[in-house]
Structure formats: C-alpha cells, structure tokens
Image 1 (cartoon, helix red, strand yellow):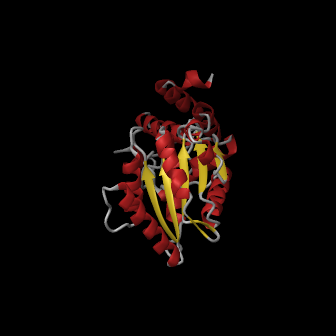
Image 2 (tube, helix red, strand yellow):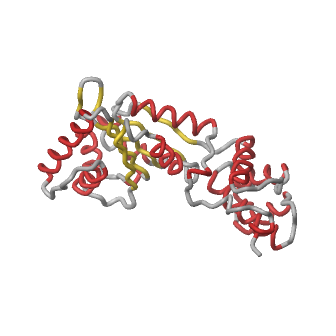
Length: 274
C-alpha cells in the first residue's frame, strides 16, 4: 500500500514535475500572466519576469505557452541550460523553434532566413513569440546584443518578434550588460513567495485536483507548511509530499502540525524558518 491508497488519492498531488492540470493561478501569477500577454498582444518586443528559486517561473512560462492561441501566435519555449552558449547557437535554436525550414550554418544566411520566416508569420496574421526560460544563464554581452538586433526588426504597429525572459533575480545583471537592450524592456514582473492565505488555497487546490475528497491536513498543519516553506511553491510541494508519506508510515488519518514540524526538521527547513 502507498500513501495514495491510504489517503484515497488518485495521483501524487505535490510532485514538482510541472503539469498544467495542477496550475494554481494565485493573484500575483494571474497578474503577471496578464501583463506578459499584453506585451505580446501589443508587439512590445521584450518583457521580463524574475523571481527567486521555486516561485513558479517555469510553471508560468509553460502556462503562458499553452495559453497562446495557435491561430494567433507562432510561439516557442527555449530553455537555457548553460551559460556558454554562442550567438550562433542561439539564432539556430530560435530559427528552428519558429519553423525556419532549412537552418544554415552561415550566420548571414541564418539571419536572412529567420527574417524571412518572421515576415511570413506576420503576413499570415500571426505574432511570433519566443519564451526564454532560465534567462539568467545568458551572461554574454554578445548574446544580449543579438537579442537587441532581433528586436530592431519591425513592422508598422510593433516588433516582428517578441521575447519573454523568465529568470532568477540575477537576470537584472545580465540585462545590464547591454544598456540599450535593458532600455527596451517594455513590461517587467516579479514573483514573490505566496502569502499564508494563498499557500492554503494552493495546498487545497492541488489535493482537490489529485482526487482528495476530505481534509487530510489540518489548518494548523497548512500554516506550519507555509512557515517552513516560506510560501515558496516548490518547497510547499516537498514538505507536503514528505508529510503525506510520514503520515502514511505513522498510519495517521490526518496530518497535524507536529508531523509537518518533524518533516521540516528532516529537510533542514526548521533552521531556515527561525
């Protein structure tokens, strides 16, 4: 028997694997999404969202990608996994994501093909949007200058392509590498930790989506989750997942604040909460 069977839940409610079904649109996430959509709808060119580790940047990026209507947008999500990328690599990835049929190794040809593709997208009545996740990894002035060059491609009414950067607060330093690009930021959002009320809604939302039909965490337990996790969604998931496992091992029908405290201690979160 697993804790799913013990608590009569269909699936794991607190996995840190990103699934849109579990998306919780807190007030700040909903507002950020509206602001970013405004940026691409009005063809502003560049928007930025920053937030600390675990606050939901990647979740929001995936949500935005899914909500961009395919009939109106040619959109793509590019995840930066290391800081040593070249401008050529970046341009090739963007070109491939936007559907350039033949990606040239020659930079001049590549830029020309990408421009032609962006014009095709525009003439088809659509808007090109590229979401860049983990954008704080873009630590090269040359890369930032390349983005500035792409943002110079315009048509009457706006830019031929919009970029949305998602990253840690260090992204501010990366943007400062190229002041003209930094000045082109049309919309900027910051994600913060969830307040206590939103943490409770978040926990209950995920349990409900997973098929839980009863209260298995007391209000005091959820408040303890918020305290130890400091309102950070990723840590909330980790604490709650471990608490359900601990409750199952102890054969407790309801998770109380003492179980949360024990789990937090095991995870080393009790020291951070002090």
